[in-house]
Length: 410
Image (cartoon, rainbow, N blue to C red; front, side, top):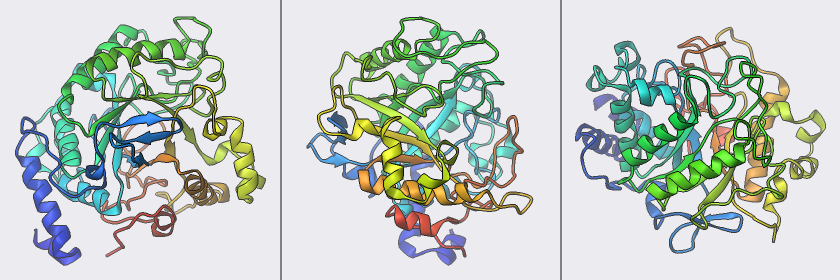
C-alpha cells in the first residue's frame, strides 16, 4: 500500500487496507458494516413516508448514489477493475460521500454466469478465474462493508449496452428471456443478498421503452400482459417482497423513465406498505435551452412529467429516485467536448436536486467505456466522474454543488 500512502492520508490508506482485508475474507463471511460509510448511520430497514425515504427511526434519508456500470454488459463485470484494485475504487466512492451505488446487471449474467476474462481484471489478480456472480458478490460485499448501500438494477436481458429501440430489450421480457425468466432471475438475486441489510433496494427494470424488434410499445394501466409495465411491476414487486419484506421496490416510469404519467390514475400497489419508490431519469435532451438558463422555468417545466409527485398531499404519493442523470465531465477520446446543453445540464439539475432534496444516482462513476453497440471498450466515458485511469474525480465543482468531496488530480 505504499502508493496509497503517497497519494492520500494515512487514514484513507487504513480505510482501503480494511476494505481489502474484508474483501479477501470471501463471500461467505458474515456481512457487517465495518467502517464509517454514510449509509451505516441509518437505522435499517428503510421505508417510505409520503414523498420521503425514511429509516427505522423516521429520519429522512437522501440517497446520494452513483451508477457503476459494466456487469450488465457483455463483459459481465463492472468497469475499472483493469485499472485499479477493487478496494481502491470502493475507497474513492466512500471518501466522496456517496452513500449508495446502483449496480446494473443483466439476466444473461445470472443465467450464464461465465468466467470473467482476465484482461478485465488485470488490476485485481485475486479476482481472476472467478465467475461473474462470484465477482459481483465480492463487489457487493466490499461496498457494503465500507458502509455504502447497494441498489440492484435489472438493466437489460442480454449482456450489452443500453438503451435504444433498435437493439431489443425495450420491455421486461424478450423471446430469449420471457417474463418467467425475469422473475426467476430476480428471485436468484434477491435471495443471494438476503442476509446483507445494505442491499436495500431493487430497481425492477431499466428504461422501459418501445421495442422495435418486437414492435411493442409499453403501456401503463391498460391490463395488457405483454405491454403493461405497471401490471408486471406489481407482480415482480410482490414476489420480491415475499422474499425480502424490508426491501425498497423501485419502479421506473415508461418511455426511458422520462415521466410518471398515468401513475395518479393507475398507481403501483404492493402487498407491503411503505416500500414503493418511483424512479425517473433526466438528461439534457429532454429540456429546451430556455429552461436550462432559468432555474424557475426548469422547475415549472419539470412539474408535468413527474414533479407533481413532490407536491404535498398528492394521492398515492411516493418518493422519487432519479436513478440516472448526467452530462459531460471530460473530453471524449478524440478530444472533443460535448454540446453546451450537456455541459450546463448537470449544474442545473444539481441545483434542482438541492431545492427539492431528491435522491439520485449520477450516471456514471466509470472513467472508461465498457463494450457494447456504439461503444468502444477502454475509450473515455464523457459523462464519467472518474478520469480514464480511474484515479481521481474530474468534476470537483459539480460535486461541490452536491455537497460531495472529491479526490483531486495527483
